[in-house]
Length: 447
Ligand code: DOR
Image (tube, rainbow, N blue to C red; front, side, top):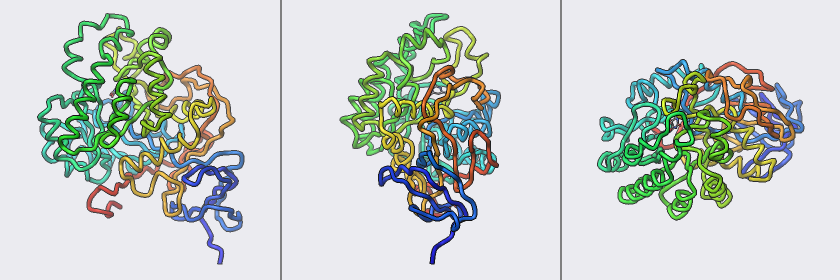
């Protein structure tokens, strides 16, 4: 007897582990129940995806949503609204809030604040500190925890672990993969005088290639001696990319759309402090070597490093300006434009934004279009041409460094556990839930 479904996604081109195929998707109870040719009469509701590509839901594993403490820049509701408008179905949020996410209480408060208020599904990183280093193995497995994040170089906020002893303690305590901002703090401190007032191009001279490379070398060494698995966030230098290609047994690699798209000095001259971020945007030669890492498979995953600051804050005089730029809403269109330009395949984009997140972080039931998985989809029109403008940006920051950029490839729908979180720019009801992890605990009993 033919099974019936609550929802049917019909007529699209599905991109998943099987390749690209014309297929319908039958959904019940928020999960994928069938993939193939399915008659509309078997479903309660049909979503017409003709002419569109149905991709596994895009998971952005690096965003800063600023709640609690900096809600004038962003909060969990606005950040996640930006996410679903940009086709993102789940986010992992960073711990440099105020207070930071460094305790079980702070984590539980974020999970409570996000549940049914965020528009997408979510998890939160726990920030490593001297104080919590010995019990991070408990914190990293709590419901809603994406794992542990270390700021080995300081950026926005106070979170910093820079000494070998604490890093070794963290690496020996945790069991899950450790995500790390890799810049060498001592070198950044020594070079502070290289910053030129009013000249953001001195940002990448101050925070130079060597600061990033020496930090990553050290992290790889400590990971090897402790047996830790590490994840180097937003890799910005070709030198690290080459080094990481020899260390894939211990390290995974993230890159961002902005490091793949912007270059020094031209984009600093055009956009000033709007492209100031840590680690910095570097020259075209480094950008090409980041693309080499992506082409050759050294890069595992794409993250936006959505780091909103207001235009007023960005309008101060460098170096009084904060580092970071909004990005969760533009990750999909910017990268689809690169797909259309032939820089990567759609299949590679899918792996970098969905299956990779499952592989690296051990997500339960998300990251592929497969029967038994959550019905999370990023539905895109690969032909649509749009110009990205500030007035499209839902982040409280209200701007994007990509303003004025013409792109081909656009998110039309964001479906999360079978619900339309966004369709043609219209939002559904916010129903965000914590992402579950196989390495969480108690095993399998997280909801
Ligand atoms: O530029 C950055 N901004 N890099 C980071 O690592 C942190 C982020 C922020 O929170 O503003």
